[in-house]
Image (cartoon, rainbow, N blue to C red):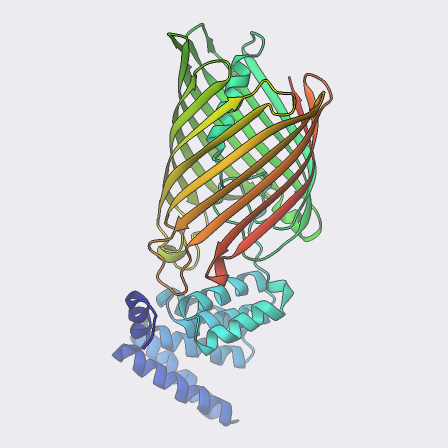
Length: 464
């Protein structure tokens, strides 16, 4: 008995529905006939029959597929490509059509697009002969390695960006009285898996390594800057350069936003509620990857000089330009909700400055069944002064995602492991240099979604 979920079996049964089954039988007989006969007249007869079929029924995906194969055999790759693309658009669940289109794209030199169709074959029917052949192509042809648009960000999957952002806001609130603040990070890293952009949720299962240079400004201007209220615009960006074959994926990320917060001082406890909006726009070599709108409500509570806590709720909506071959399965568009908490304890010790711990729960309600999930994340961070102006920061995290709509076996559910070490040298009050090492891993039973990344290099930070 097959262990494939019922929905997956229904997909396969769809391929064998009466009308499609007749088309499949016709396809098999015609393919055999074309291969065993050298007569141009007989091939022309088959072609004429198929053209008549698509004229009578333009939605006959099987006839379009066979027509594409005949054109390909005749050397007319342009017409063959149009016919196979028509077949896949009419029946995106056809494993045979996806496989044939991948093979033709590979023959025409479009390895990147071919890899997408081979990957779809594996997802639709992982135990089929088509999937075995597709996997062999992906394994033996290095040029088919899946390369997503590459971005730079020391992205962490354990601690949401909002916690870091709120910590920075606390530092700015303690800074000298001025209406603006600006910090710039730049550096050079070796990244073993470059397929991550600021609005992405995943690492690529394929390993693609590159050296990266980047610059990341972070600006805030407090138009309102009173004793109780603060408000104004913000801007954050990521811009990078990659080596060799990855230059076409140089990143331009823009994150303009607005914030409003109020300081409430009561009984020796300071509470700072905050409302922030951020728009994120990602481009690669001038081509838009996608956009995200995010709203975060938070409250930072300073209990005393040594304890403070952050609680927050963040909601965002993301729209990627490319939704994949079958958006109901492959699209990452949609809403994500996250609720989290962190607490920091500072210590007046020589070699222990602070310990932070926290976590969050999230739900990604996305259009594609491959990507919707419920998740939980836990993280911790320790700040260890080694000597004057030299600090060691250690971070670790664990997360789990339940992809409740994923229809295939094995399960896509995954554990997320993260570690980070930063050795920071404070050169002056406004300038620091760090040696950084990151390791992230998505650990899943399904090998199609296993991924990991190590990142190491130097980071420079300037505060103005």
